[in-house]
Length: 508
Image (cartoon, rainbow, N blue to C red; front, side, top):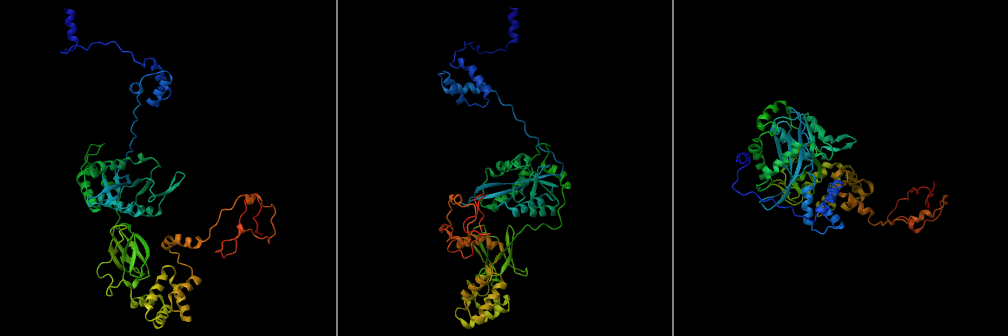
């Protein structure tokens, strides 16, 4: 009785009857457990399907499910991989920056991919996000300016990945930075730091920031357009992101930022000009083109090469003396719009410039152009404006001095026709080498010059049949060696392959 009392005190009381002890059932896998253990020891990552195939070849006649469950139960568990340590930086010492693309279905029915820029202070974890249509150098600098204005200062250094706007490449282990971005960094007195290729953990703070953006901001929200997205993002940063608690310090982010802000590099008195500057030719109807849209310019500048300054919101057109002659709100990229506010082409309101406006353009080119336009009006009074417009269009490909010289030559012979001017320029002047025209017309010019010349690859056996010594210089060429019919220049020397002598027709 006493023994039973002590046993009852030590054992847990339960109203349910104890489970019966069952005799273990034999399984088909019992005879193959040693082989499974051997396979898992030799091949730790072997799949259950491969184990099943090996057992079937050894005489196992059971099913795959039993093998899968057994392998899952006896496979050694992988040791947990510890998280990489996050570098610790003091107040104002380091920031991290990166881009992330997101495809947004706006409620207006348009689907667009936007680029989100992020700049995060490594100490306080305070973040700055900006939305752009592209992630080029100018958008990168504008994103930095928004972050600097939000924080009231600049971190002493900032980490970047291998984006071309920051890093042109590597020379061994030395990063080669973009000179334009270095000028921007020098202006704000911070040091860019390039992360190692294929090491995203080198900037874990900004990567975690995008994770927070996706889960807390983009998830469960809808946007009317890009402007609405940017407005909601700004509100989220102020009301949600800044109100978060620092994960390591267990303190509000704004409270930690209050300690970091005095250690940031002060902003300069004048901001860096991040605008894009390009040169464009004013068309005959008074427009300059940029990013798939056209912007109105006064008719006084038709065919002139004009500097164009482009910001994220506006486009400025300057005359040759750098006077601002037009200012427009930037249209969406690739919209195909003609941006011409009312009154931008007063007072004629025509689709093209008339003769009086064209005469101003000729007067600005010089005395030779003035004499030619005067003679053109006398020689062809009804078609003078048409020929003048076609002549001014030649300024897109030829320098003004060459055009004036051609006009003087044509005037001396009474050739008042735009075709004659084009022939004179083609014979006596070199086309303009302005970068944008070379880029736009390179393919067309190559096709015009090489399209009719069908060069067949030569049979390499011809070189094996060549003699070692050079043949006489008057040896006739074979038909395969004849130049293209369109080639009017003398044949150039060709370099023979090693050890095969000179090709037929070459001379010392």
